[in-house]
Amino acid sequence: MCRIGGLLALALLAACTQKAGRDATLFRMAAVSDEPQATMAGREVLLQGGTAADAAVAMAMTMSVTLPSRVGLGGGGACLVHDPETGTVRALDFLPRAPGGPGGAAQPLLLRGLAALHAEYGAVRWEAAMVKAENAARFGVPVSRALARDVEAAAAAGRPLALTGPAGLPLREGEQLEQPALAGLLSEIRIGGAGAFYNGSLGRDYAEAASAAGWPLTAQSVREARPRWIEPATTRFGRDVLSFLPDPVAPGGALRGAWLAAENTLDDRDLAVDERLVRLAAAQRAGGPALAADGAATLVALSNDGMAVACGLTINGAFGTGQRLPANGVFVAPAPGPDALLGGVAMLVNQPKSQFLFGGAADSPAALLVPMTEVLLREEALTAAMEAARGGVDPADGAVIVETAAGPAAIDRLTRDGYAVRTAPSLGRASAIFCLWDRASSSFCSAVADPRGSGLAFIVEG
Image (cartoon, rainbow, N blue to C red; front, side, top):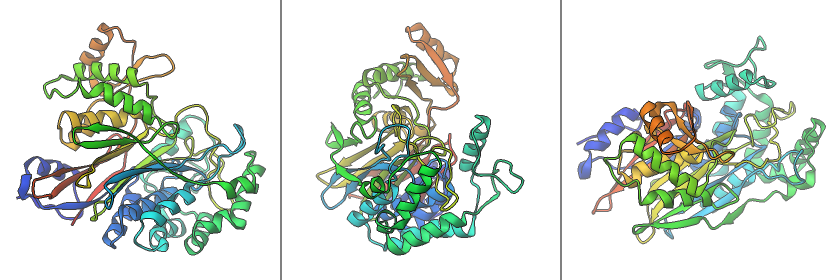
């Protein structure tokens, strides 16, 4: 019998998953995100008796402090939520959209979106989900590898740096990041709720500061920013229902089309890498998803009551506009351009039994489609599925882009089959949780943060 404690080494989990079977220790709580300190915040909330929604709020808010290159109060996101009481999946859209057309700031919707999620499905107090983020801003945290990589990439691209060390150099991994202005803002939001930002002087001050910095936004647009609960795009998968974010929230319709095209061609476990990538390329041409969304992050949470939440978060570009407001420490998100705001979010649920099976979110459709096909169609372990080489289609010219890890044989095969091929080191990052159910209605779950990134996954013993 495999037994794993609450603090989990992913390699041990993968090995144990292969051997576990019916005798495995039951795991029903999990948290995974693109940033380790955010995952720890989600884990703490789950251990306090919080739901997956509470954990998602804690992780998103913590990432607004520890990963401000991708998540922030000036931005927003979208989630899929499995409601264990009804067995259904709902979609929540709180993306930072343009209130007045391109050229200005986006409506800041992160807080109202998370407040809506908490109001509908939360079990712990709002303050409990907020305190980790506030403390991280007030007392400081070490710069994670995830943030350090984004800072380095921004510096390499010649973008102005709003996050620098004492000598004015780009922040490096392990250096202390303190944000007292942001801590003050988060303190008021912890006490007064999201309404303290949208209905009072905080939102007005944000709009005025963004406008003064060259990104027009009105206080009325901030007040009127509203999330919305919507129906996901769905398809049947055997006896289960697979849900996606609908267009135009994310390339959900396109991702759904790519999945449907792949479903009947990728269920052979003996397919070589080159043949899998050929079939994936054909599937993605049928669905037409875009590649990675810039400045996006992911999280997935599962609580002991069976609730699951998978979210994509964005500030519409790495560090948003690059403009960090001195008064409150928030990065302004620009009005979105024509490209995809999110990579995609998907969730598989057995509705009659109200059993969550799979939830994933990614900053590119390929980063989600490939693990889904590996786990659901080819029955690979989640760890191996996340490591599998990925391929995607560039919507600009229809060329196939494959990860260099795919190897020369796969590239040659695609070229012989008539595809224009380019290579890239990575095609985005994903977070995912997958649960196996036995006949006794017991589950064994695994959670994995993408090895291409620097996130963290935890399974907590139920």
